[in-house]
Image 1: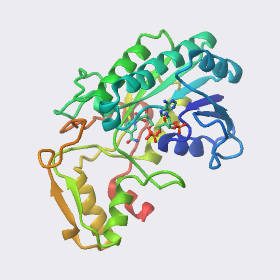
Image 2: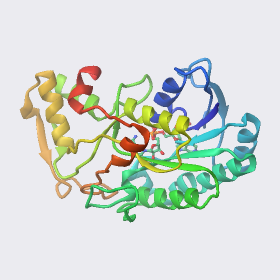
Image 3: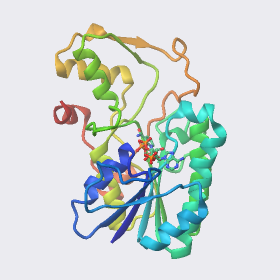
Image 4: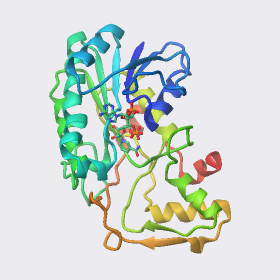
Length: 294
Ligand SMILES: NC(=O)c1ccc[n+]([C@@H]2O[C@H](COP(=O)([O-])OP(=O)(O)OC[C@H]3O[C@@H](n4cnc5c(N)ncnc54)[C@H](OP(=O)(O)O)[C@@H]3O)[C@@H](O)[C@H]2O)c1
């Protein structure tokens, strides 16, 4: 099976490549904005430089590679950036998704679109069928893109995931638990939110779920995230306990005290019953993952 990943240099894209290469039947290519092949990309992966904002280039790349499925992971993924640069966010998250859909339509291949809990608002947990209620522009852009995917006429799947964390890869920023670990190790005080509830996702669980969707040719919307609900403060305290660091270094902060350009949903937690029953999805608990990370 031929698989094309957009955003192959992103956190999810890089972990996904590593997971897909464990299976010989997958022939994998990835697109990125860089003209030159990224150093980190494993040798078996074909690298295809691509400006997703250019519909002709998207069509050319997809037509040349002839994927069975495109995993559209590239996005402007930082909510504050999206809030402050809405025109660019619309182009990258919505218009580029239409370009990918058009290219998939031209060669009649499947599409898996990476989406987010931020399509919802404050009152989770949410099922796959709950109504959208994005509270920031990033979430709104993903709502619009999901609409394009759902109406595309393609065989499509949408994966909504949440606050993904996992091993730090060279050249990428640490995910939340590593950021906490590093600060506490250096004896620094950190201030973390107590009023944002998330079903955080271990990246290896996410990539396993995506492989299940690919193999089972599953269509529709799937929530692939953790099963436990934590605030960032909870996670930081668990990391502190795991590292036997001074718990007093973890200080609580609320949204009211620390305003950000993009408002965050209070409780954008997701139900995963559908993924568990239909895909056999079985995410690990944070206490199982922490010893794997540190
Ligand atoms: N990580 C999370 O916690 C999380 C949670 C929910 C949903 N998601 C979704 O999951 C997907 C992957 O997330 P991620 O964490 O891997 O994101 P990421 O690390 O920010 O990577 C984003 C990727 O998108 C590409 N990209 C950004 N702007 C682009 C543009 N203008 N044109 C072309 N490519 C562009 C980047 O390509 P270059 O490297 O080539 O610049 C990068 O590879 C995204 O769709 C995101 O919305 C992530």
